[in-house]
Length: 97
Image (cartoon, rainbow, N blue to C red; front, side, top):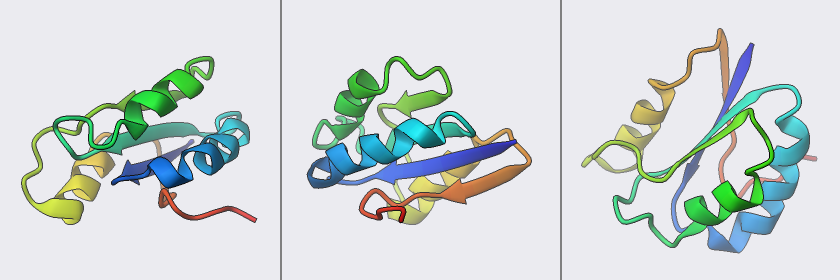
């Protein structure tokens, strides 16, 4: 019923924390992770794809379609992929308490 959207941007410093938080969330929500950089950015998307490969509710999109408009366009492109009734955002550098 819920999709958690995680837009990445030079997110490597938060990768371990992000992966640890996403594991329990994957049990109750669909998770879409993306990086707007066409070249994969700093590689965090690929690393998270590997780290979370065992979780069927997690989808890592190496690069959202060419957004060309910065973080707003990236967020809108990611939001357009959500198919559940509810959506929430998880910034890459936030930690859920």
